[in-house]
Image (cartoon, rainbow, N blue to C red; front, side, top):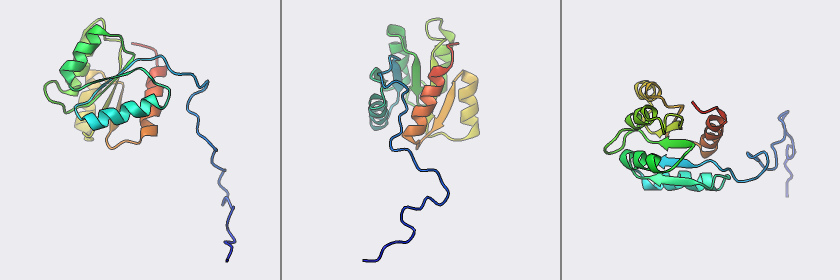
Length: 154
């Protein structure tokens, strides 16, 4: 058996941590999150990732109209919404949320495959707090969610 002479070398780089802990105290989060996504596989993927990272209160709506109806019935701290959905488009969802007193404070992240600057501009002008394009890295999405939730409500 030949040993690799470079085995164990770090090449001047810091050693990676054993485990990445994204929670400071390890307790489940209390924020309620609404996912508005017409692709059920993506919606479930996001929900499972959030549940597995201390966000147990996640609700899914299959389109913009259903999502808007849920925000009238329940209190959420964050909405993740797609852009190109049947019925009500994502930027219109954001616009309507911002227009209603009950929901104008909601933090909103667009999660969409639309990557052009025209779409990003539309989302931001409508009032979105952040914009993530698909395919996305679940760790990045989680980091952006936590960053948006740290911001004060509008």
